[in-house]
Image (cartoon, rainbow, N blue to C red; front, side, top):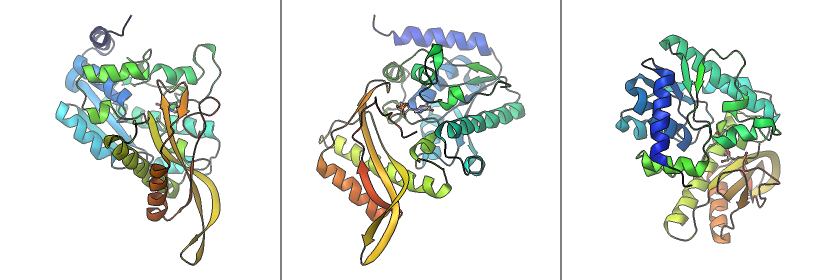
Length: 318
Ligand code: XMP
């Protein structure tokens, strides 16, 4: 049976009313399509009682806070930006292990939401968790592939009730919901972005410097791939980004020796992120991306293209 978006929206709007009533609720807005869809559904149910909070972790995409405010405020949603980057970098200092990083990030998010909720006397936290998030986090007796921060990072003493209207949905269904809810295409068609942000695109220890580098590289990959797709040169991949390996390699710039980080370009085709195939990007486009990265990001010494499918790898590096 096809997915009935209108029925789903009506059911979840009623569920939100029943769970939250006329009290205020806090929604963790990441700017991705999942939390955006959750925001619109809950906003239908409780209107201005919904506080959408965007946490700037220092690990978000370029100009993300501005983009989110620009997209949501015209729809009547209130968006609060919390700058918590210093706190995240401090908590992540010296931590290399991927699961540990995810747990720390999840915990920081939750503490920030708890503080906000306490200040505004809020009892319910709305999250845009979807099925692959909890399945990969070891849900329903499965092995933990990676702890999605909105699942694995939840502390046992969470002082908030959770409401997750999209828990049973897959990504393609979320996109159908986004369309039905009238989300602008800039958000509805947006590629997925992981909850822990650029932290899972920085292999090993996260630092502010590495976050700046990978953010710039991600913006270049997005820009070049979107331009090529708009020009009809390629089909837009399901997801495309850059990641940073801590491995430094030797290079030459002008007459001088350089010794800089390795940047991985990743682009995949997928339906729901559970499996994926690397995209066969044309060599000319890869060359353009590589030149632009090494020309404009000094600390990027080498650019490689990831030609691994999922399985055996995953989409993100960690
Ligand atoms: P992986 O790396 O597990 O990614 O193959 C599959 C899809 O999920 C995204 N991803 C996440 N999304 N919280 C999220 O909301 C997370 O912790 C998380 N980790 C990975 C990833 O970007 C890809 O689209």
